[in-house]
Length: 480
Image (cartoon, rainbow, N blue to C red; front, side, top):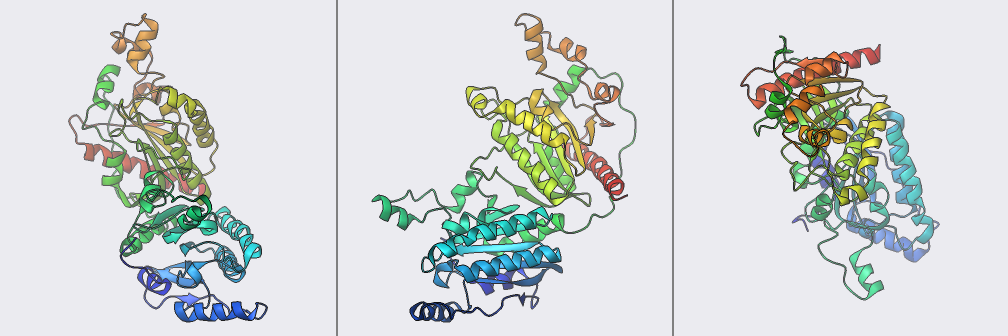
C-alpha cells in the first residue's frame, strides 16, 4: 500500500487551487434509519470528519472550474449507501448542467451492507449519470485510491476517460477477505494491485498523489483549454521527383527514422499517455495520447515503430486500443490524429483467434464515419491492413519517404514470382507505393518534403507544423 492514506480534504487541497473549493453537499436526513444505525453513522462522521462517505463540490484547477466527487474511506470504509449515491448522482448531473469536467476519486469497500439492496441498485443511477455526463461531451477523470472494491469499482470507478491509481492500491471487484471466506482459500496477492491492472491495460497508469496535480493539469489542458494559433513554420519546397520506391522503403526502415514518439516529444505539450483497452488488454506497439500539437488539442493514436518486431508485432489489442482513441476523440469532440508507421499487423494463430481482420475492419469503419475532424499521417512504413486501419481520415498527408502497400514488397514479390523475394524493389515500383504516387491518385492531400540527412527531430517538427496548420483549418471550417 501507499505510505500515506490521503484523507478526502487533504487530497482536494493538493489538487485544487488554494481556497477554491465550495461544497455542494446538503445535510443528510437519517431520521428514517433505525437508532443503532444512526449511532453508527454519527460515530463514522466523528471519525472521518465528514457527514458521509462522499464529498462533492466545485473548485478551481489552475483557474479552471471543475466539479469533484471524492470518497472518504474513514467513513464506514468509504461504503456507498443511498444517501451517498444520491449525492454522487446530484453532483454529476449538476456538473453536466453547468458544463464542468468531473474529477472523481474513489476509496471504498463497495456497497454499504447495512443498507443492502436499496443501496446496491443505486450503482445503476450513478452509472447512468456518469454516462449522461460523457454523452454531453464533458470529461470524466478518476483517481483510484486503495482500496477500491466491489460496486464502486464496478460502476463510477471504471467509467472514466482517463483512469489512474495510487501506487500499491488494492483495486478489484471482490475483496480478497470476502473471496477467502467464500472459497476457503486466499485470493492471489499480485492480481488486485494498481500496478498489475496498469500492466494489463485495465487502467492507464499508476500515479503517486503528489504527482496528481500535474497529471490533471495536463489532461485538462487538452480536454478543456481552447486551441491557440500554431507557431511552427510549415515546411515548403518541392518533393524530389527521382527517388525510387525502394529507396523510400529502405529509408523508413532505418533505426533513426522519426516515429510517433518523436512527434510527441518534439512537437507535443502537456502529453498524457493512455494505455490499454480498459478491457484487460494492452499492446505497446501503439501509442495513444492526449496532447497539444503546436497549440492544437487532439487525441493521437500512432503505430510505434520502435516497439514492432518479429517477437512483438502489432496485434488485435493494438487496434482495439486505437478504437478506444477514436471513441474518446468522438465523445469529447477533439480532433483525432492517426500516425501510420508499421511493417504490418501480426500474422499468427493468436492474431486470427483475436479477430485481427475484424479489428482492422472496425478501425476502418469507425475512422471513416467519425464526425469530429480527423487527420491521418503516413509517417513511415505503411504495410498492409494494419496501415489501412488508420488511414481513412477526413484528410490524409504523408512524408516524402513514406509509403503504402498491401503487403511488404518482399511478400508481394513472393506471390507474383513463385516464392522469390528478390523482385521486391521492382514490385514496390510497380505497385505505386510512394508518397508522390499517393498524392497523384488522391490518397493523400499533401506530401511533407524531407531534407536529405535531416534528424528525426527536424522531420518530427516539420510534420507537427503541418498537422497543427491543418487541424486549425479544420476547426475553423467546422465552426463556420
